[in-house]
Length: 124
Ligand SMILES: N=c1c2ncn([C@@H]3O[C@H](COP(=O)(O)OP(=O)(O)OP(=O)(O)O)[C@@H](O)[C@H]3O)c2ncn1[C@@H]1O[C@H](COP(=O)(O)O)[C@@H](O)[C@H]1O
Image 1 (cartoon, protein in one colour):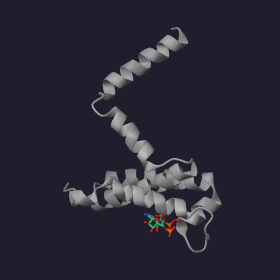
Image 2 (cartoon, rainbow, N blue to C red; image 1 turned 90 degrees about the horizontal axis):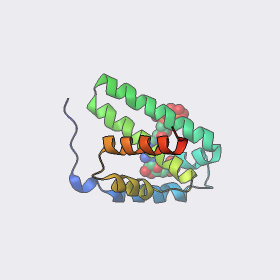
Image 3 (cartoon, rainbow, N blue to C red; image 1 turned 30 degrees about the horizontal axis):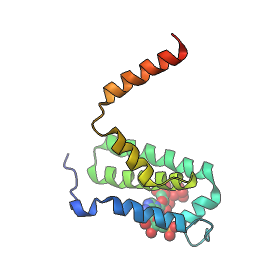
Protein backbone atom coordinates (compact mmCIF):
# COMPACT_ATOMS: atom_id res chain seq x y z
CA UNK A 1 0.00 0.00 0.00
CA UNK A 2 1.45 3.34 -1.03
CA UNK A 3 0.84 6.08 1.54
CA UNK A 4 0.10 9.46 -0.05
CA UNK A 5 2.95 11.87 0.54
CA UNK A 6 2.61 15.44 1.73
CA UNK A 7 5.23 18.18 1.96
CA UNK A 8 6.80 18.28 5.42
CA UNK A 9 6.17 22.02 5.73
CA UNK A 10 2.42 21.42 5.43
CA UNK A 11 2.51 18.85 8.21
CA UNK A 12 2.94 21.49 10.85
CA UNK A 13 1.23 21.91 14.18
CA UNK A 14 0.30 25.39 12.89
CA UNK A 15 -2.48 23.73 10.90
CA UNK A 16 -3.93 22.31 14.10
CA UNK A 17 -3.51 25.60 15.97
CA UNK A 18 -5.21 27.56 13.16
CA UNK A 19 -8.06 25.07 12.94
CA UNK A 20 -8.50 25.20 16.74
CA UNK A 21 -8.86 28.98 16.50
CA UNK A 22 -11.49 28.69 13.77
CA UNK A 23 -13.37 26.06 15.81
CA UNK A 24 -13.29 28.31 18.89
CA UNK A 25 -14.52 31.28 16.85
CA UNK A 26 -17.65 29.29 15.87
CA UNK A 27 -18.82 28.92 19.49
CA UNK A 28 -22.27 30.54 19.77
CA UNK A 29 -22.35 31.09 16.00
CA UNK A 30 -25.23 30.55 13.61
CA UNK A 31 -25.94 26.80 13.28
CA UNK A 32 -27.32 27.43 9.77
CA UNK A 33 -24.12 29.13 8.62
CA UNK A 34 -21.44 26.92 10.16
CA UNK A 35 -21.04 23.17 10.62
CA UNK A 36 -18.93 23.68 13.78
CA UNK A 37 -21.47 26.12 15.23
CA UNK A 38 -24.16 23.52 14.51
CA UNK A 39 -22.19 20.84 16.38
CA UNK A 40 -21.67 23.16 19.38
CA UNK A 41 -25.37 24.02 19.25
CA UNK A 42 -26.33 20.31 19.30
CA UNK A 43 -24.07 19.73 22.29
CA UNK A 44 -21.71 17.16 23.78
CA UNK A 45 -23.61 13.97 22.89
CA UNK A 46 -23.85 14.96 19.20
CA UNK A 47 -20.14 15.86 19.09
CA UNK A 48 -19.11 12.59 20.73
CA UNK A 49 -21.43 10.65 18.39
CA UNK A 50 -19.54 12.14 15.43
CA UNK A 51 -16.19 11.17 16.99
CA UNK A 52 -17.45 7.59 17.34
CA UNK A 53 -18.78 7.51 13.76
CA UNK A 54 -15.54 8.86 12.32
CA UNK A 55 -13.49 6.35 14.35
CA UNK A 56 -15.59 3.53 12.92
CA UNK A 57 -15.24 4.94 9.39
CA UNK A 58 -11.46 5.11 9.91
CA UNK A 59 -11.38 1.42 10.88
CA UNK A 60 -13.48 0.51 7.83
CA UNK A 61 -11.19 2.51 5.51
CA UNK A 62 -8.15 0.80 7.03
CA UNK A 63 -9.73 -2.62 6.56
CA UNK A 64 -10.20 -1.72 2.87
CA UNK A 65 -6.50 -0.81 2.74
CA UNK A 66 -7.24 2.32 0.70
CA UNK A 67 -4.56 4.88 1.62
CA UNK A 68 -6.49 7.90 0.31
CA UNK A 69 -9.62 6.87 2.19
CA UNK A 70 -7.63 6.29 5.40
CA UNK A 71 -6.18 9.81 5.24
CA UNK A 72 -9.65 11.28 4.50
CA UNK A 73 -11.30 9.45 7.40
CA UNK A 74 -8.48 10.17 9.86
CA UNK A 75 -8.78 13.86 8.90
CA UNK A 76 -12.52 13.65 9.73
CA UNK A 77 -11.65 11.91 13.01
CA UNK A 78 -9.00 14.49 13.99
CA UNK A 79 -11.33 17.35 13.08
CA UNK A 80 -14.24 16.02 15.15
CA UNK A 81 -11.85 15.14 18.00
CA UNK A 82 -10.72 18.77 17.94
CA UNK A 83 -14.33 19.94 18.22
CA UNK A 84 -14.68 17.55 21.20
CA UNK A 85 -11.49 18.97 22.77
CA UNK A 86 -12.86 22.51 22.34
CA UNK A 87 -16.16 21.43 23.91
CA UNK A 88 -14.14 20.53 27.04
CA UNK A 89 -12.02 23.67 26.97
CA UNK A 90 -8.96 21.89 25.59
CA UNK A 91 -6.62 22.61 22.67
CA UNK A 92 -4.54 20.43 20.32
CA UNK A 93 -1.46 21.81 22.13
CA UNK A 94 -2.65 19.94 25.25
CA UNK A 95 -2.58 16.66 23.33
CA UNK A 96 0.72 17.53 21.64
CA UNK A 97 2.22 18.27 25.07
CA UNK A 98 1.09 14.86 26.31
CA UNK A 99 2.59 13.16 23.25
CA UNK A 100 5.79 15.12 23.80
CA UNK A 101 5.86 13.97 27.43
CA UNK A 102 5.64 10.37 26.20
CA UNK A 103 8.49 10.78 23.68
CA UNK A 104 11.13 8.14 24.29
CA UNK A 105 9.01 6.44 26.92
CA UNK A 106 8.55 2.81 25.93
CA UNK A 107 4.87 1.89 25.76
CA UNK A 108 5.63 -1.47 27.33
CA UNK A 109 7.61 0.09 30.20
CA UNK A 110 4.86 2.65 30.78
CA UNK A 111 2.27 -0.16 30.82
CA UNK A 112 4.32 -2.18 33.35
CA UNK A 113 4.82 0.88 35.58
CA UNK A 114 1.09 1.65 35.44
CA UNK A 115 0.17 -1.94 36.35
CA UNK A 116 2.65 -1.85 39.27
CA UNK A 117 1.15 1.45 40.48
CA UNK A 118 -2.39 0.05 40.24
CA UNK A 119 -1.36 -3.09 42.18
CA UNK A 120 0.25 -0.91 44.86
CA UNK A 121 -2.83 1.30 45.13
CA UNK A 122 -5.21 -1.66 45.38
CA UNK A 123 -2.88 -3.40 47.88
CA UNK A 124 -2.84 -6.69 45.91
N1 LIG B 1 -12.06 20.34 8.72
C1 LIG B 1 -13.28 20.47 8.67
C2 LIG B 1 -14.16 19.37 8.41
N2 LIG B 1 -13.89 18.07 8.17
C3 LIG B 1 -15.10 17.49 7.99
N3 LIG B 1 -16.09 18.40 8.10
C4 LIG B 1 -17.53 18.18 7.95
O1 LIG B 1 -17.90 17.12 8.79
C5 LIG B 1 -19.02 16.46 8.24
C6 LIG B 1 -18.71 15.00 8.26
O2 LIG B 1 -19.82 14.37 8.37
P1 LIG B 1 -20.04 13.00 7.59
O3 LIG B 1 -18.85 12.56 6.86
O4 LIG B 1 -20.58 12.05 8.58
O5 LIG B 1 -21.10 13.43 6.53
P2 LIG B 1 -22.55 13.97 6.74
O6 LIG B 1 -23.45 12.87 6.34
O7 LIG B 1 -22.60 15.24 5.96
O8 LIG B 1 -22.73 14.28 8.31
P3 LIG B 1 -23.98 13.93 9.22
O9 LIG B 1 -25.22 14.50 8.56
O10 LIG B 1 -24.03 12.43 9.34
O11 LIG B 1 -23.70 14.59 10.54
C7 LIG B 1 -19.24 16.98 6.83
O12 LIG B 1 -20.31 17.88 6.80
C8 LIG B 1 -17.91 17.70 6.55
O13 LIG B 1 -18.06 18.82 5.69
C9 LIG B 1 -15.54 19.57 8.36
N4 LIG B 1 -16.10 20.80 8.57
C10 LIG B 1 -15.27 21.84 8.83
N5 LIG B 1 -13.90 21.72 8.88
C11 LIG B 1 -13.04 22.87 9.23
O14 LIG B 1 -13.76 23.71 10.10
C12 LIG B 1 -13.78 25.02 9.55
C13 LIG B 1 -15.05 25.72 9.97
O15 LIG B 1 -16.16 25.08 9.35
P4 LIG B 1 -17.60 25.79 9.45
O16 LIG B 1 -17.95 25.82 10.88
O17 LIG B 1 -18.55 24.89 8.67
O18 LIG B 1 -17.46 27.12 8.82
C14 LIG B 1 -13.63 24.82 8.05
O19 LIG B 1 -13.10 25.98 7.43
C15 LIG B 1 -12.64 23.67 8.00
O20 LIG B 1 -11.31 24.17 8.20
